[in-house]
Amino acid sequence: MSVDTLAARTTHAIEVKHSRFIAHAAPVATPAEAMVFLKDVEVRDATHNCWAWRIGGDYRSSDDGEPAGTAGRPILAAIDGQGFDRVMVVVTRWYGGIKLGAGGLVRAYGGAAAECLRLAERMPIVETTLLSLHVAFDDLGVVHHLLPGFGAQRLDEGFDADGARIAIELPATEVEGLKSRLRDATRNRIRFGDNS
Image (cartoon, rainbow, N blue to C red; front, side, top):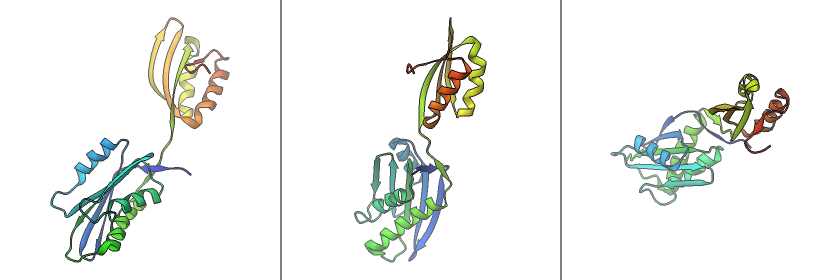
């Protein structure tokens, strides 16, 4: 099963029994980045700013004063239920004067988060690999020409007496194909940093 993150920040608002809920979601790579997003979107004069994030096997959530388990966990369940990773969702509530009860809160927070994520543009998470190459000067042109076809990005390039050392990042699924193609194109003169 492929896992997605968000392509960009997104927002969705709902009203439940006169309480207003606004969900903000964003792609995040680290817990620190998630907390920066929280500070960016939380509304100080709102009744609650509840949130959850998932980054790989790590996750956290907060009910921000709502009864335990009625806000943060439903938001996290919405992230997980829609197959997202590396995502932070903050749901801000303004109390409208009518109590929703525990079940109503779970539905409202989870629903606001789920609808926000459902409407968001998804972006697949592609696992990447770092690879280092040593290329003879004569083969440098063909190597530079082949890298983009495998989704490889040059991170660094330096030269020594025998050629160039190139550090690249590429999708993990493309590594073996690129190695094979580079070996063919250079008549096996290319050397990989991992001794393959």
